Amino acid sequence: MTKAATPNPIRAGLLCRCPRCGEGPLFSGFLAVAPGCSRCGLDFGFADSGDGPAIFVIFVAGFAIIALAMVTEAIFHLHPLMHLALWLPGTVLLCLALLRPFKGVMIALQFHNDAQEGRSE
Image (cartoon, rainbow, N blue to C red):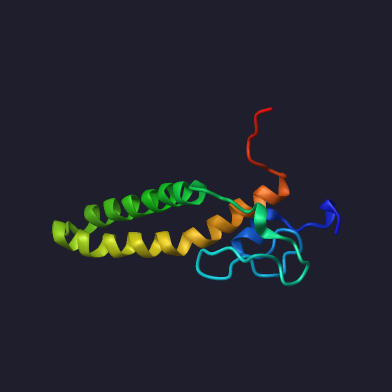
């Protein structure tokens, strides 16, 4: 497959699909990257997203939860323990829901941009 025929890396990543063909699964577990694509045979050995997805998840989830907590407080004036009971599980669930697709996007962008580890000569 040529570089022009590759799927959109954002779409392939969000769907957790192979960055080259857009069909095979990218993960073999919740966050475990598969050894390779079952459709096109792409070796996923290059896939190393590091801490990048976690940083983006923290920013997105943090902004969303803080905004919701502020709006809720402005409308209902809840007890602090009620806020804790609402937003702690909400934060955990939102972070877990976003982590896999964000990791998929980072890996797909790595493939699309042919990103490699920095080397010194």
